[in-house]
Image (cartoon, rainbow, N blue to C red; front, side, top):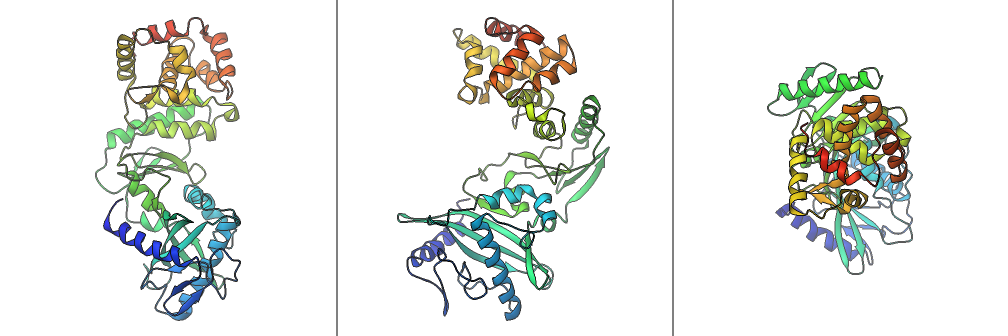
Length: 402
């Protein structure tokens, strides 16, 4: 993300930001300070990159300008309505909406200066793809917070906006595997896809839910995933990594991942539990992540139970004074081989619950409440594991084969 294009954008933005201390000028047009309350019809609340135009047609450009001003005003107020982005699109691409809502600012605090970088029509003038950089302004300078691409389309004499996801994914190849339809842009691993579809079918049956058709979007990298949604750059997210992320969208009809993996059970199971399982308001998050690691391997590494146990045996050999109960209670402040210890320990406990009492006991532990206290009460009553024997139990479990 340190490419020359971002350097050029930064320079342009710095000049624009400096000018906002008085007024912003684009060519011969004079725009009011974006911190002031203005009418969208006369004073856009954004500035334009050098040479950028919405459309060669002046009437179309004016309507796009007014519509974008209305959207940006709504973003600043945190009042996005169906007029700006349809309710259907807000639900369909909730991940995109999350990125937009983080642009909300307190009107009394210097906030985002929007800079339109470019606009072009992919379909001969019917709709437009508009890239906007959002800059944070302060006395000490400015920096790019996000670059968002919007897909604008005509609606009731103006333009509505949405994520460009449908446009950006229109040429992906597809493959049907059981109740899962995969979308991908390069080679496809059917064996991994069949493993995922088989797990999905079996887990739905075990929790007593009907099988739901799933659109599985498999991107090779997180950057490809973000760009498909229109999130070109986001300084609050690690979009320079090559792999990351897996989540449900479109009210659970989509599963989207940037891991390049047709079998990313870890990310799928975490979202499925919170969305579809009875008692999901009482889920204990570390145990849900432990279940995900047990069934799908740990996170992006995919480390299996055998590997995870070996890592914990090595940790115990290196630090014989370690207390696994204390490490568990540390939460994210404890890790083994770059894995959060309490997630991995929950994977071991998940296996123990399944081996000793079966699936229902594992699910009862998962629904033991959001607090540590509730979880340990259930752990003691169901498996007889408590503070006094926790370390010894984990030490025993990591010696056993999975």
